[in-house]
Amino acid sequence: MNQAQKEEYLREYSILKNQGKPFFPYAVAKDSIMAAIVLLVIMLLSLEFGAELGPKVNPTTTTYVPRPDWYFFFLFEILRVMRNVPKFTDMATIGVPTLCMIMLFLLPFYDRSPERLITRRPVALASGLATIVVIAFLTYSGANTGSPNEVDLSPPSGLTAAQVQVFRAGELVVGESGCGACHEIGDNGNNGPGPPLTHIGSKRLPGAIAATLRNPTAPMPSFANLAHQSPTKFRDLVEFLSMLQ
Amino acid sequence: MPKLPLLPARTRPARPGEGSGALDPIEAATEAGLTVVDWLDERTALSPGIRWLLFRKVPRGINWAYTLGSATLFAFLSQAVTGVFLAMYYRPSINSAYESIRNINDNVFLGQFVHGMHKWGASVMIALIFLHMARVFFFGAYKYPRELTWVIGVVLLILTLAMGFTGYLLPFDQRSYWATIVGVNINGTGPFIGPYLSDFLRGGPDWGATTLSRFYSIHMLLIPGLMAALIGFHLYLVTKLGISAAPWLNATEPEEVVEVVEV
Ligand code: HEM
Image (cartoon, rainbow over all chains, first blue to last red; front, side, top):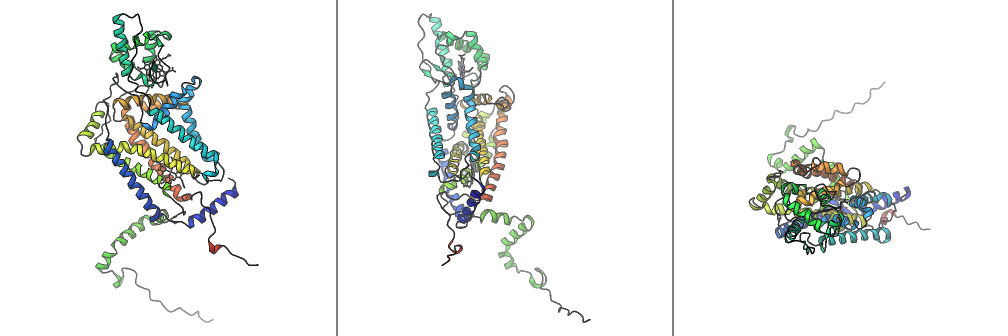
């Protein structure tokens, strides 16, 4: 907006403002009604859904789902989606959200046209609607990703009975530990943000797998605690992964 | 030289409270409210500010979409009040956090209700803040002269999300623990400040005994304090600049200003 447009705006605004009503009591009345509705909705939600607690923290696993509250689903989904474009993964995790934030901050400084009516701002209308659709879609698919706690594979042929037992035990630990939230294992789990583990045994030696579990690259959580507190479970886990040829 | 004519001496009217001007008790009682307000105003000079805040005009055509900002504010206040009550019973230590929340849910009078209000209030506030932002965006209300109001708003949005993130860990159940670990790890991959931010959140390179109390103090002191200050500034700007008019209205000069000249 140039100086003339600014002055034009201020003049028109002062006329519209003068034709308006005082904030108190007119706007205050509307705001109070809205506040009452908000309070009512919060109380009804609380009465209806309460505030359940899950099982107590246990850093050495048992079932957990590394799942944020619904309003962070879209971030987690961005992670998942972007990992299919490996070149950008690093940038995607926090780069894309950071970029969006900066765009949001600077909005008034790059959108400088004096037009305010949305029907005459086609670019703003399109990008606003697109943002809403994308976020809604990401939230929706984030909410509907399968439970990461069920892993059910058939053991590869040619294992001894003892090995099958280890296979089953490791499979259980993988399920309990929620690896499926980030990894695809056969038909189980989510494809991303981590790489698929279906054939991890042919790609990495058991030692490398164990090292990753103890000291992974973010955002994967560390399982050093598990190794420390239940070495058997940890060994089953590593052996199971190594059997995935 | 003739003397200047002297003005006749004037009788000074009695000052309030002087002589018989005192109010009788009944009169004093009916004026008590005013007296208190006067007393306060003489010392604080707040009344012009309150007049400025309450009796400003809002442009015509204001509709319900304009209540979303104050609804967000109200949700924030509700979070503050329910949060204070939860803080009375919550213990931010690894060994007792979970049990103290259990205790709130199971034993404290209305505990589960207040806990639920705080939990669901967070979701409601997030929904409202996004709706408020959408209103501002689609009405073009971020344009001149309200750019700074928008920028402060974006900071408030980030802080609100940060409240959700830090609060999620506090019940210390499986879900919240692991989600937070992943969240902090994601933070750590961020550009420039990422690793420092996650070290700051954890209280060191690893999860330790202080991590939980750090999250607690950030969640109930640091961010709310910042937010309260910024909301104050946000509202000052809204009042100072006036709430934007509905974009579909055109200003017409009031009749009496338009001078019709016959030729
Ligand atoms: C804690 C969060 C927030 C609170 C309590 C809050 C409160 C308010 C209130 C009460 C108003 C008065 C007009 C109305 O209600 O629409 C307002 C206006 C405004 N808000 Fe917010 N707001 C918050 C967050 C945001 C966010 C996230 C943005 C955008 C990024 C934003 C941008 C604006 C702008 C530009 C105005 C001026 C609108 C106008 O004059 O029409 N606010 N805010």
